[in-house]
Length: 358
Picture 1 (cartoon, rainbow, N blue to C red):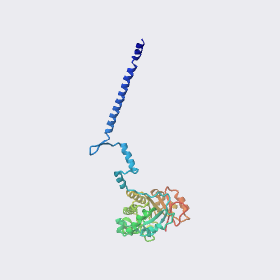
Picture 2 (tube, helix red, strand yellow):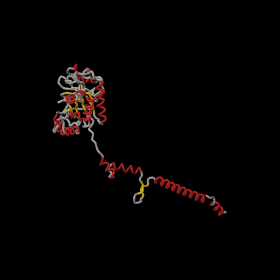
Picture 3 (tube, rainbow, N blue to C red):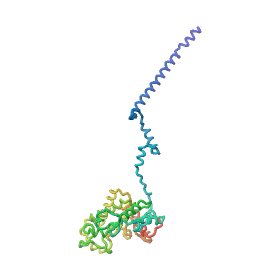
Picture 4 (cartoon, rainbow, N blue to C red):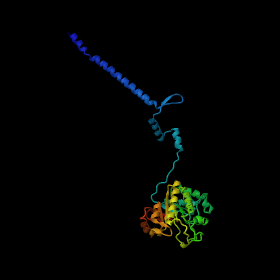
């Protein structure tokens, strides 16, 4: 009886049942592993690369990215190193909030340009040079045909070297251009570009000098060509002087019956032409204008064609030549316009940007 009871206990099936369950579990694990390997193989196939010798390798995008990142951080990849060697690095000048500028003399555009910089006060961070004066002379080696034809080019390779040295220096550079006061071109092209007398001959102001007429397309084209050429030299800022009609002389003798626009419209058109040319030239610097102090205080002036509210909208900065006694009143007057004001002085003010004329 005891033997039967023991056998009966052993035949309840637990031992055999556990064996069958363990076998099924192992089989399930094997199937899962096979399935994962199959999926992994199918997934990896898209990243298999066969080399020329028939060997197989894998190129996974995340591994390639890490490799590129490592190269960027100092790796020695040949292709990447070649690309790095081909890179052109441009070092930009630091952004200057206030410009403490000094206008350099004529020697700055000669062989002594470095000496001109070395002699500057330590507080100066900007320099201005005259590129075109009121006579029409250009103090660089201009390639504008109209300037060559009227004998306006006074610059040469030496001046071009000096200009390059200035713009490559750590100083903020300002190129000054007399815009419409131009005796040389006006006399050469009196009919199609100059302010003329009633007789049709070129008009003279009180100093026996001549002016360009911005309502005439030839005058606008010439000025625009000069400004665009100067912009390509790399100046941080271009300052347009004499951006107005003549103010002194026998105004009644000026021929006006053939004008097709007002003086304000002509100046606006010239400004638009200049802005378009600078945009096409890829110029990224400032475009500024100088205005006589009495016009700023009055707000406008009929002979000049200037209306301050209109002019201020077209330029980045407005320069005004003032005395120390006028500075406060002009500063207050300029607050009416949304444009930066820069005084032209003989001595530096206590604060803010300025330009010291020699």
